Image (tube, rainbow, N blue to C red; front, side, top):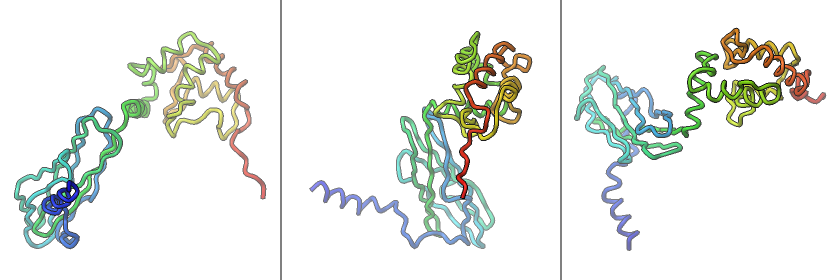
Length: 255
């Protein structure tokens, strides 16, 4: 009985917002900058915002009567309602999706009802867990200033644990946090699987001076880093003894 009532209600009201397949406005009438928009927001963000640009490329005025969403959490706003677009006129349809308390990826649809037909737009929000969004923020900061990991909030993880440590303990505190992490950024290499030869000089240079243009900071105090010469010597010796000097990349089998 309940199923029958649900089907009747859907047939009566639910189909009202579903666009008919043959009512799409021709591409020669309205031009949208995209049919789908995607944004990424950190967990805890209350809303995701989108904007669709639209232009009337026909020779006659087109009226956009309304823009409705497939779910109450999403709201589309027109500059005016009804919104009349003269030939050549353009503007934006703003869409806001409420993502409070939500996670993962969410997709909703917006139906733009015009005198030329109904256009379906899609909005997609990807919500990043708090820890991932914090890591991403850290990567952006490091990309702009590679020495930034030793200052501010970043220093709690990247500078303070290395104080007074040597060799293996220093590696665990200063290097493993990035190079051995399960969430290692794509541009951060696995030091145990480098595709080129290493050695004491290589390690000393990499530790002391870092790599300009990358996320790798200079650890030498003289260059704004946190390690003394003695610490750099101990870390160089540890890496030289731990990681084979020859390239560790797999060698293709001969044919």
